[in-house]
Image 1 (cartoon, helix red, strand yellow):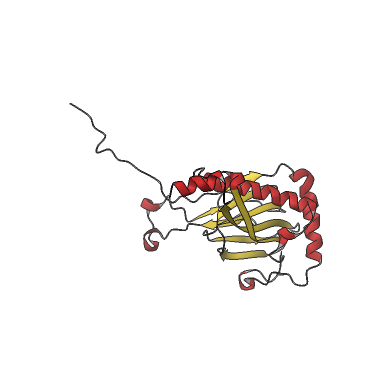
Image 2: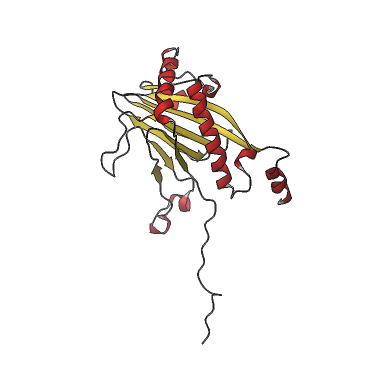
Length: 236
């Protein structure tokens, strides 16, 4: 009797949704400086939502949002954080694209960047980010964010929702692997990267201590004339 793999069951995963996380080594030295700088900017705001963007999906109180050009600020500690974010994002994009390009051959463009300083009752309703391929959140200060038991929502955490319509909305055990939502990790000094198509929300935060995060939207291009650009062109 002979055996054959011709009729074996095979599976392949396509269209994965990738998250990346990385801790900032300079958090203990530069983190407090960035927090202090952002709070000075907050005190100079004329409105709570300085960007004026999507005000209807954000809480009327308990949330301070800057304009969307934060990374243009010249504060030295903030710029070191921006550099960390830029190099990490370039590496993550290369991993997501099977190392087709090299990190130093990528040009990262931050199209939007801002801070959120949240206190009692602040939240941002479910939304997606347009005009970019990758987005990120850097947690400077969690404040009193914590989860009380595995079944409770994190206080002020980031929640992401499945991008697939599972069977027209029908669910049973067959599509259980398409988890309805995921609560991302939250930790001081942690960078979270995610693709822009993911619907997500900033859950309501309650606490006397401020929750401070930096967020951004980014585009990425392979620099012309690099080995990576030539390799990608040859494989088209």
